[in-house]
Image (cartoon, rainbow, N blue to C red; front, side, top):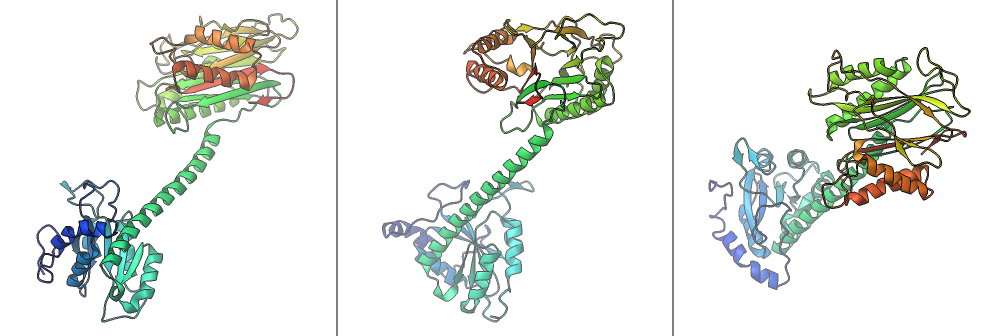
Length: 472
C-alpha cells in the first residue's frame, strides 16, 4: 500500500476522509464530555494541534479498523504509520536535526500492533520488538494492541515497559482515546519519578563526594580550634576554585594554607583540589617556605589548562615554643607568646584578632606574586617569610577574596578589607566567637551584597585553645 510521501499512508481505500471527520468531531466530543488527549511537553505544536499517533504495523494490521477507531474516538488524532520497529525507531529520534535534516513531527504516543491471528501461542512473542523500541525511544509512551488470546502478552508488554495494552475486539474509539491519554500521563509520571530518584541519588553522591574533596584538618595535639566555612560561587556546584587545609607534622609545627584559583568552573575546582593535595603531600615530605611554594607552582603549571590561570595563596607556619623562627634566630618571647611565619602569594592578608583589641590586618609588605603569574626562574618569583609574634589568646582569620569583593548597596563600592575589619570588630564587640562569628560575618556580607555572593568563599578561623582541638 503506497504511502503519501509524508510518512502517513492514510489508507484512503479503507476509509476515505476518516481523519478529516475525526478532526471535525472534536468539538462535539468535548461537549459530550470527552477530554482531549494531552500533548507531550515540549511539543512544537499549538495546543489545538492534532495528537500524532505513530502506529507500528505488521502484516496483519487492520488499517481500516484503526482509522474507524480514530473517527469514533471524538479526538483529533493524526495517524502516522511505520512498517516495523526499525522504521519507527528512525522516526522517533530526538527532536532537532538528524543528519542535517530537521525532524518533521513529534509523536505523542506509539501504538505497537502485536496481534497476529495466525499464531496466538507464545506469550512472549513480540516483546523483543517492544524492548528494541524502548531502547531507541525511551521517552515515548507506548500502547500495545493484541488479539483476544493475547491478554497475557499485553500484561507482559506492560511489565516490559509499555504504558498500557488494548485487546482488539474490546476496543472502541473512546477507549482508544482514553488509553492514549492515560499512556501519556503515565509516561510523564514515570519520568518525573525517575528524575526525582536520580536527583536524590545524585544529591547523596554529591554529599559523599564533597566530604571527600574537602579536607579533614589533621591537628591532633595542636591545642587549636579550627573553624572553616566553604561556599562555592557557582549554582549547584560542589566546589569552587578556593581550597584550604591544615596539618600538624611530627615536629609539632602547624601548617595552614588557604588559596584561590582564578575562575569559577569545574576545571578551576579540580585544579584547586590538586593544589591542596599537592600542598599536603609536600608538607609531609618536609618542604616548607620558598621551596614548597616553588614546587607548588610547578604543579600548577603542569595541571592548569592555560597559561593565564593563576592561584593566590596564604600559608601560615606556626612554630612550637622553643623552636627557632628562622635558622640562626631565636628571639626572646614573653610567656604565652608564639612564633609564626606568614607567606603571601598575591593573597589578601589575614586578620589578627587579639583579646580586647580591634582586629588588624597583617602586613602584606613582603608578599610575593600569585602562583603562576611569573615563571619560577624569574627573580620576582619569590615568597619571603614574614615573622610574626602572637600574643596569648590570639586568633587569625584567613579568607579568600570572595568575602571582601561583595558589593555594598546598589552601587559599585566593594566591602574591601577595611570594611571586613570593621564588620568583624562589630561582631566581636557583640560577643560572637568561633562558628557564630564566622557565620554571622558571611551572612552580613551577603546582606550587604543584596544576595548570595557570586565568587567562591572560603574562611578559616584559627584560634589558640588550651583544650583539645575543636573543629567547627
